[in-house]
Length: 471
Image (cartoon, rainbow, N blue to C red):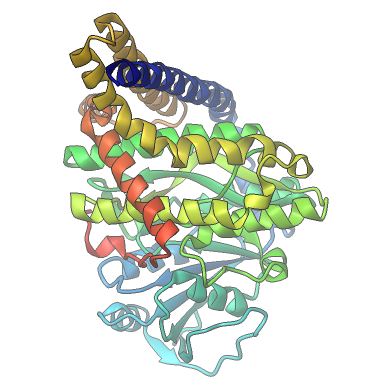
C-alpha cells in the first residue's frame, strides 16, 4: 500500500511538472506572437488611419448598447463619456434592467430625459416586459429603455439589439470607460475587411486608482492594494498578449462583454444572446463561430491589441471570489453547450486545438493547480520526491509564470505606455511576482467551485461589480 501511494505521488509530481511546463511554454509562444503585433502596431500608431475612418462616409454606423442594473455610482460618467466618443455616426442605447437603486433617476437628471413613444423591433425574443423609453429633450443620440429584469444581462442586450438602428452593435459594460478613439480602433477591422470580420474586441485595462474625468481615464496609475494590482497584471497578460496571440493564430475564442463590436445581422441570425446561459458574452461568440464554421462560411474575429477600454475590478476578496466562480461556471457551460466542436476536424483549428486547450488548461487545470503543491509536500515527507525535483517544480510552476507576467508587462509598456511614473511600474512588477504566491491557488479554487456549480445546475448571478469596487 505504501509503495502504491509513493508511486502515485511521484507520478502526479512528474505529471504536474510536465503540465506547468506545457502551460507556461504555450503562454510564452502566445506572448511572443502577440509581441510582434504589439510592436508593429506601436510603430504604425501614427498611421493607424483613425482620421481617415473618422472622415470617411463609408465608416459603418454603430449602436452602443449598455446593459445596466443597479449602476447608479458609474452610469452617468459612463454614458457621458460614450456620448463624446470620436466616431462619425453612432447612438447610445442604455437598457435599465430593473434597477432598484437610483440608476434611472441619475440618468434622467443628468441628461434631461423625457418619455417618448418608440417602436422597438422584435427581431429577438425578449422575456422582461418593456416599461418605457426615454430620450434627452435636446434629441441627443441617446435612448434609455426601462424593462423588467429576469436576472440575466442577456435579455437586456437582446432588447438593445432590437432597439439598435445601425448595422454594427457595440456592447459596453456600465462600469467601463473608453478612450476617445476606442470606436475608431475597434471598427477599423470592419472597415478594412467588411466581408469577413464578424466581431472585434480590444485589450482591457484596470481603471482602479486612475484619475477618471468625464468618462475618460486621464491619468493612469497602478491600482491601490495588491489584490487590484495583481488583477491588473492578470488582465495585461490575458487580454493584451494572450488573446492577441490567439488572434494571430485565428483562434480567438471569445470577445469580452466589457467592450465588443459585432455585426447586428449575424447576431439576429443566430438568435442573439442566449437568455438561458449565464455566460452571455462567452457563449455568444462561441455560438457565432460554431454557426459560421458549420455553414462553412469564411469569417474572422478580430482583436485590437492597443488597450482602449478600462474597467473597474473587485477590491475585496468576497466580490472577487463571486466574480471568478461565475467566470469558471460560464466557461464550463459554454464549452459543454458546444461540445460537438471538440476534436472535430470540421471545425478546424478551433475544434482541434483551441477548445481542448481551454478545457485542459483553463478549466480542468484548476485541479492540477490545487493538488500539485500539497502532493510535492507529501512526496518530500515520504521521501519519494527529491528536493531537486521540488525545486525544479517551483522554478517551472512559479518562477516561469512570474517571468511571463513580467515579460507581458514589459512588452505592453514598451508598445503602449500608459503608466507615467517608475513607482507604478515597480508596483506592477512586484504584483507579477506576488500573483503566484497564493492568488493563483485561490483563483483555482474559485474556478473549481464555478465548475462544480455548473455541473450541479446552479444559476449564476448578474453581479454589478461597480457597486462593490473601489475606483
